[in-house]
Length: 189
Image (spheres, rainbow, N blue to C red):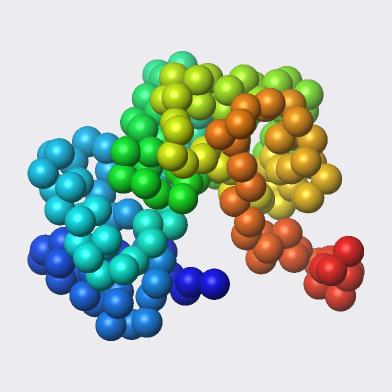
């Protein structure tokens, strides 16, 4: 197992970033720039990680590909596709996002997040992102959340079957599923 941080910490250069991560005992990192960065900068960060022996664990998308507002949804889909292509190019383990929400807050808790219509939009958005990016070296993943898809392991299993894409995988964040004393005490189940 490799330990990493979600923060890229304050740094001035890609090599300084990698040195700081390594110095803290990290073996895995979150890629600190996105797909809109200049190619030379992307290559410099990827090279610095490789030179330091750091695994690029993930590239974050962090947006709402099922947003109710069409303009926001299109921008989010473009970002997800771009981030997945970036993750594939640099050999990251995954590109991660959340499913998205039905309301104005991209990661918000709404009753409609559990509707059949939202489920279908979620499945379709994941399929479209993977199909458009066509990754071969990485996976698109959804971080589980207690207030949206996938809310539990069974729903994640159902989501994997519904998406039906080889390059869709699990991003495990157990803390997001331990949301009650019952789940805490029975988490092995």
